[in-house]
Length: 129
Image 1 (spheres, one colour):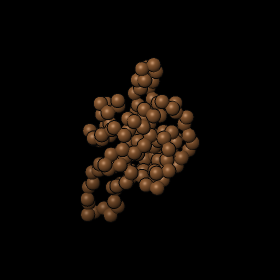
Image 2: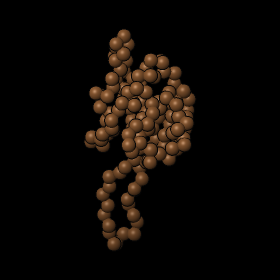
Image 3: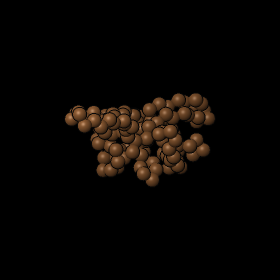
Image 4: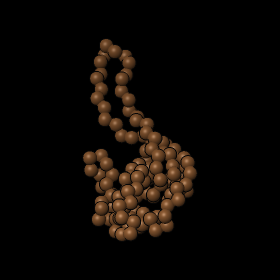
């Protein structure tokens, strides 16, 4: 959490973490070599937006689709990484976000509710305004 508290919106980061896994294992008394892998290391890169949720997810923006600059309409693709699964965070640089866009991102994140559907973190659209 100390690393996360030092992050600022717009930091371009690399996060090394471990994902959940699904496995199938055959236990064979004739073989003494285990063939199960229980950890799935992942490396994610993106622009730090903030943390959200009761269980705490770090939100990284992957893409911004600026659909209508005059009306302030953007689609944001993002990843939510569970804080408890993070091994290391490395700040690689800073991304200069337009001030109004950065303020809208912060506002959007403070209003967000988190729910999971099909293994993906969803921040419902009704919370974007």
